[in-house]
Amino acid sequence: MEEVRIDKWLWAVRIFKTRTIAVEACKKGRVMIDDVTIKPSRNVRAGDVIQVRKPPVTYSFKVLALADKRMGAKMVPQFMENVTSPDQYELLELNKISGFVDRQRGTGRPTKKERRDLDQFAGSIDPDEFDWDE
Image (tube, rainbow, N blue to C red):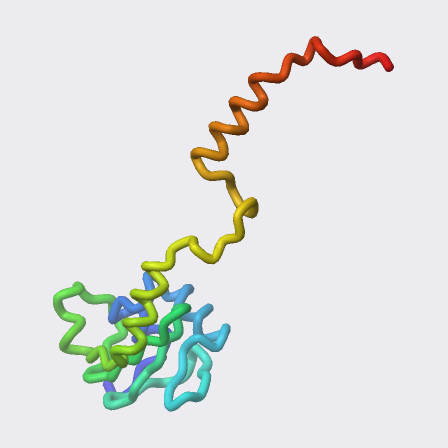
């Protein structure tokens, strides 16, 4: 086997959970070889370096061997080498640490405390106090 479709290889080495997701990533321009976005039908060869963008990180993998059938996780290191730069992992750590800090207060779902305050406020209003006929 000299060449395999990129979507099949990405699925076989467990970078994506399904082949459909791998195809969608290629179509959205999230998979690149030599900084060029590629189509899902593009063939990959041993020695190619593939960049996969899964925001906020761009992972890089070197193709060591080809596979078109899904394999166990223990076999993956025989088929690819992770050559992602350490600064990408730092970016991932910073993103994990920041969590929901960037969410503006009052947007999105209420926090547990805000929900309790709303329930307490709503419970303190007596609907009989209002004259609905006026």
